[in-house]
Image 1 (cartoon, rainbow, N blue to C red):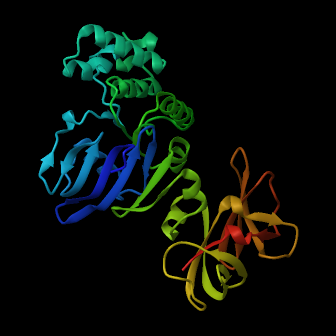
Image 2 (cartoon, one colour; image 1 turned 135 degrees about the vertical axis):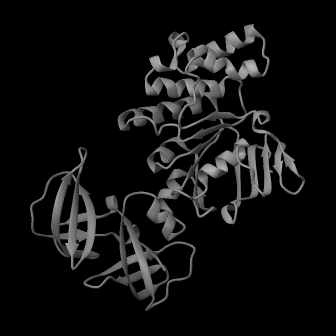
Image 3 (tube, helix red, strand yellow; image 1 turned 30 degrees about the vertical axis):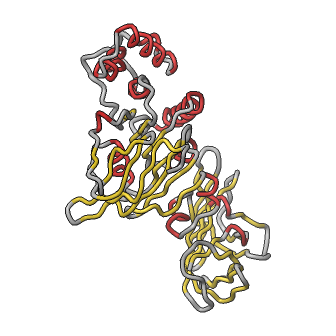
Length: 358
């Protein structure tokens, strides 16, 4: 275990009947770090969070919090959820409707039999830190969704847990409020030097809030790294396709020079770069290439890695236009700053932006 780790998960396995959900997951959460668990539905991210919280029972592996084993399958250790001293923020907020904001936040301290003077000071500090100092006597139904979310977070933070667990904490907010809330939540995490494990299905949220992202796929960690690494250096076709907004092109490898690959996609041939940790790409073999939508450019004529395509439609997205182009059934999307008319266009895909996976 890393000495700086506040949470360590080692080879964790969990099944529902004959259905394995976690297939040997290992991770470390360091002090002051935020990790997001990202992945499609059924990948195991929520199950992993709930296992750490003590709300699901694994079958094998270990979980340590602040240096103490709270689960050890081999030794038969299983510390109950209420004794793990974790801060929990649920998707539904789970506030007591009949208690005031102050009493909702104080609830965990009262369970721990904290004296009333300390409760008053700590709840007041928590509410002040989250901009809720003036709302202590209100009830949850008198608050907006964003305010209820802050109350749930204040309740999780009030007893200074070593780790805070957040399960889709922003999913109940509308799109505009979510963008504001993720910036606010990131600022809070940095200011208070929190250690947090966050489950989200929103990659933008994960990238904005996290120091590190763990991408789960089928109960295993497909890749982990900083948001920049995850976005720019995908280790597999799954990781490349899951992150970002992408064009996917299938073809046959016609030529290879080290990591430079010439891909025949039917009507056209494009140079790309070998990517990922799978089987090596071989000449004559099938391959799939991925290019982020923002990596595609409209060009003024023929040239290297360019192909003629017909404009299908332009869509206005507010901060940019998105174009859909076609060539013999191959569709490519690109971004630009102005609408363009119908007709043939030259599309450029720079070689270093076209990632080829065998």
